Image (cartoon, rainbow, N blue to C red; front, side, top):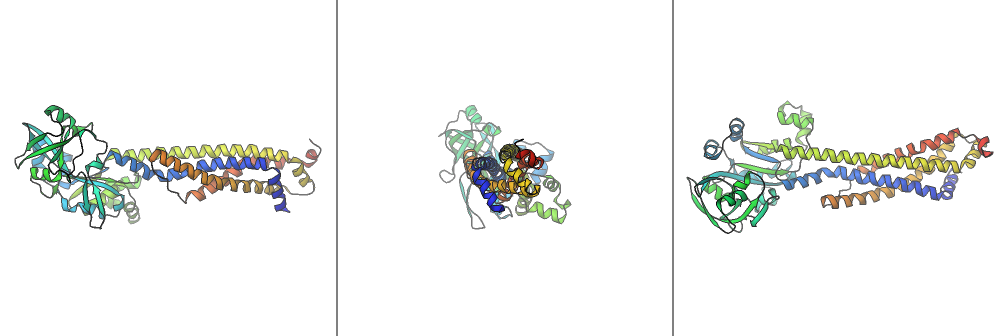
Length: 429
């Protein structure tokens, strides 16, 4: 009898039930899309920020101490900073616990050269370098991807595969020296003299606009540092820092065993830096704070925005459900009053109404989930240019939210139902 009454009510008031289902569909779809995007936005934001350079730098431990004490430039820096990293250890970066979070890296060697009587900083690196890693993985990496925001105003990127003697010139230095793409320049140090062909002029809006960029081999030959590196820049996908990460960054040994394992097995910038130091001899790895903090701030604000949109959509759904369920109860007042008059208890009548609403909510919620997942894909493709991963965690969260919102929206109608007096209703009052 109970199920027959539920079925009869659903079909008799199918218009209002469809409106309730549509209201729940809207709320569920917005909640689904926002939650899926929120849970997947971390990697998307990280990938977007990777276009703006490395977020970890690795330098020799000895040079890091000198940098903390002195500010040195030119030949003084070259003479005092005598420590280097080993080029043959580069591949070890991709053997750490978080190897798959390392998306790019490039080695650097810098020295001061003489160009037309002026002292100029020359930097050597990889550009489009193919690397065979100890793990068997193949990787193409270098400055071309780490400095993707550079504007090549003349010529093209340097490429050690095409021209081992190519050099790129910063726009300010090119203007001061009257250098153009295609020119040949002569640079010298006390160790060597080389003729380099200018393959490109770049503009990046920083001190690098006054520098020369050439291949790693050229810079090592000019600085007499074969097989050695001044620094390594690493681009890694990281998790925003929290209190544990900040504490570990100061002193990992101060952590308890449980906290240490949690920190080591989470992709914090500080834990990735620590693991890099474990595989690169006598090195200090540190996060680029501007990038790391930007990642955390952007993610927190984005997630807060998603949560607020979800809450507002659910509040709107609850208000819509409240109005529709109350109107439905008022329309059925004679039927419900008669049930009370023949002895039906308030609890049984309330269960009848709630069952009808929850069945309607089930259909609206299921449809809303799939519509919301579609919305999430539209957001992912429009904003990030990639698909949003379906998170199974979202399903139970959305289900609970739909139940809570439906129950809250039904409260005014249930209260009106409980106050209903059969005699007054049946007499049309």
